[in-house]
Length: 462
Image 1 (cartoon, helix red, strand yellow):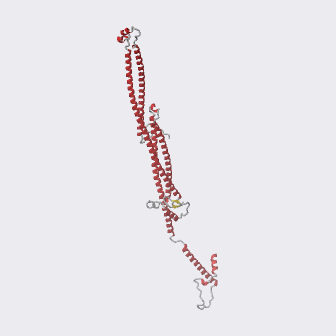
Image 2: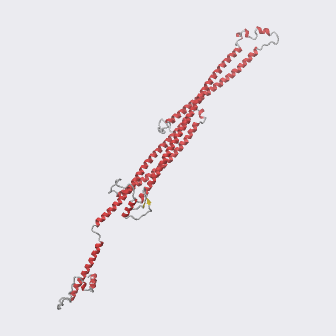
Image 3: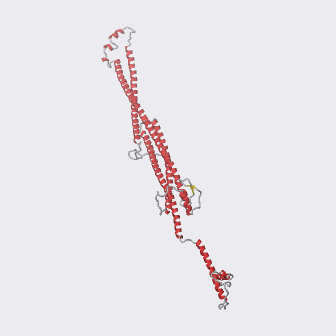
């Protein structure tokens, strides 16, 4: 009923019976043939059996050949163990490579954290410096407002102290703006570092998902990424196709092409490169920050000392001028006393020249019509000059007394001006000394801007 079996049987019909193993034919040459016997079974019955034998022999040969071929190609019985070992080796190689990458990512994360700490300390120093500049500006404004309480005589003249205060205000304002610009750069770099830290942390968490079953000790893992080892492990894992150009690996002198499905992914390499560049930029900014901080501190201290020296010099000049004014006030007072005494003596001398007020009080010898004069004037041309001399002397006394009174008035006015100027100079010197003490007291910046005990709050417009 099977067509293939029937075909085989037809093919076997052309074979030689002698070629069939196990089928023995008695040779007639060895011994004489027995006498022919009558065949009881039909010939077709015998042929059918012979064909069955031939078919079985062919099937046996085919089976043996198939068995030999299968022995060469069939898997060994330990295939299951070999597959498990190969998979485990692949997993271990990938986990070790990933552990190296995670280690490098953690090193970058620690470096970013340390740089952020250093940059934050620099930022705090900048903020303190900016606060000090604002306090210095408030102190400058307070000094100007304090000097505005000087007398009008002193405020009418713009001295070097006013110019120094104006120059200090402009200088402090420029320093504050420079520090604020530096602070903005630091804040922007801190944001970049924070972004890098977040990406590194997320990437570390993602890469660490396959390293739970291996040792995470830092001493058991290499302290740098070995590019050839990772490349060899990647080739062992079957990641031989490169999707990007060779990129120099960080802190190694060789190049390695990251694999999207390997331990070192392009994203990991990009994040590490970004973190390294951000760290380098942050270090440069930090160096520039501290240089700017020290420079502004020196400039601020120099400006503060210059203004204080200017105030001290102005105070010394004011005190010296006040002393000269006091000396001149004393001399003016002495001159006023001398003029007053001289005026009194002139009044007495004029009284002596005019004589008594009442005619009855004039002595006979002093009268113009005394007997001796009357006798002398009996002749013509005998007029005496006594009356003319007395009148001239009285007029002279009157003129001298008028000039003396005028001098006394001028001396009093000069004394008044000297006293007023001395009083203004003393007030101005007291205010300047208060300003100097105020600036020295607040030079350490240990006071609250706009707080109690520091005067009313002052708004500084930048």
